[in-house]
Image 1 (cartoon, helix red, strand yellow):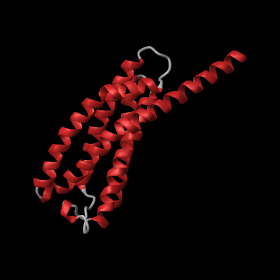
Image 2: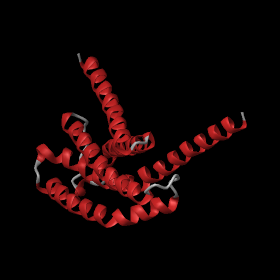
Image 3: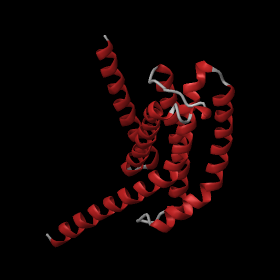
Length: 193
């Protein structure tokens, strides 16, 4: 029964990632936006999961920070899903600005991405700061039942903020350049024929 539940959970995660790519592809009219967002989401969950695993060795020397030997359960899965939603929202805000700055330009450039990130940076930091403050208070004063959830969310918000700026945007630029390079080579090949 446990094995079957694990397989269903993995299948559900994979299907949800496919739907996220499809939704963002539909919204931004390019698959590179969806792939870049999913890469950032996977990064966020893996980093949070890794830090939770590190707590097994760090909870004794860092116990004064309220770090425990956290275990993965339903509460942590809920935290991962919350992190995915938070990070996806943040990434879509950055991608919207990139699309606005790009306009009708045929190629996405590093300058466009940089300008877009700079324009959304204050909003991203203010939103993340207020969310972090709330989650930190929840972590400190929330009690034993929500302690692990708040810790995972604390790490996830930090990593999600970082990834929407420093992972999703550069990956989008790289994927867009790969797409435009492929279309140029197809045009050159068909023109030569």
